[in-house]
Length: 116
Image (tube, rainbow, N blue to C red; front, side, top):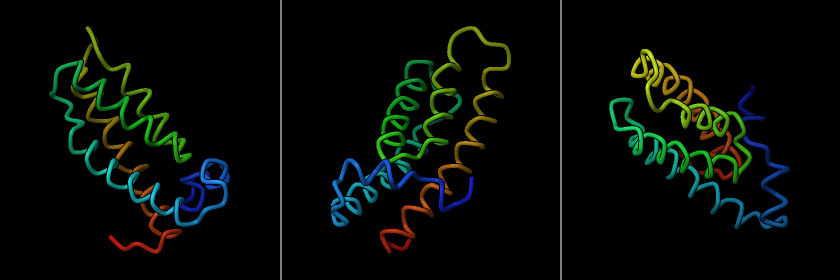
């Protein structure tokens, strides 16, 4: 997925009804959530904390149309319970999630004009 398609801006536009200021505010909140939730998504945390954090980020991502981020968060939610190599699976998923999150953040910053 290219940076320009890391966020589905047509999806987001439906919810902000063409209001660019509202779109930018929503995207700034999304960027804040990306940073906060990725810091909290620690592969060594207990299942409840891991799943809750992944779920929270999934909602934020899907709300703005960052589908790849949302899909990876959905996969993360499943990495609970008695799973072989759970820590390694979580670490690998988190690496992929960070990559997609970076693309989504870049797309959001490009449209809002807000620098890092």
